[in-house]
Length: 97
Image 1 (cartoon, rainbow, N blue to C red):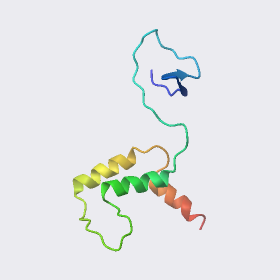
Image 2 (spheres, rainbow, N blue to C red):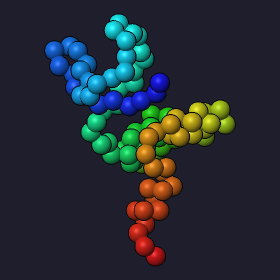
Image 3 (spheres, one colour):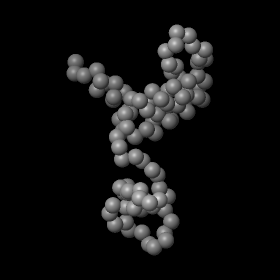
């Protein structure tokens, strides 16, 4: 059974906001995803900065080109971000033609 639940963290316990179809003491795996929307552009920029694909403006950069393996790893990480793809975001930012 795969499902997404909304829970509240209170007094050290995650409490579901709706009934869950689980047996008593049944073990499950969870993934924590904040309910607050995140700024996707900031997350993409941060990922690019951490990977070394982008540097903060400073006038001079010692950044070497990325290897193919590093580029693939970065593409995989960016592809795993939830929501719209970067190309969709850029097209929307450009506005109507």
